[in-house]
Image 1 (spheres, one colour):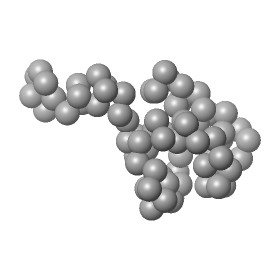
Image 2: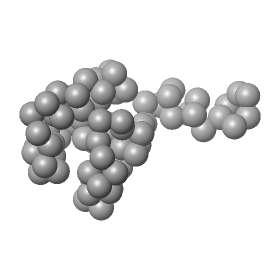
Image 3: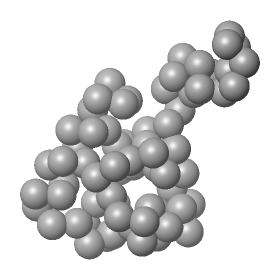
Image 4: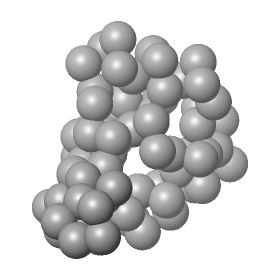
Length: 73
C-alpha cells in the first residue's frame, strides 16, 4: 500500500506468488491446493504431479503452466 516498499513489491521481488493469484484455476481448485499445503505458485510449478491430482483437464494444464512460467520464470 505505501508507494514504496509495499507488500506487492516484496512479493514481486522475491517471486513468492500465492496460488490464490492464479487466474487459470477455479476457486475450488485454489482451495484444494491450499488445503493440501500448496501455498506458493513456485511449489505448484516444481511438482507437476499436483496438476493431475487437482483434476485439471489437458487444456487447463497448458494454461496453468503458461501462467506459472510467467509468474515464476
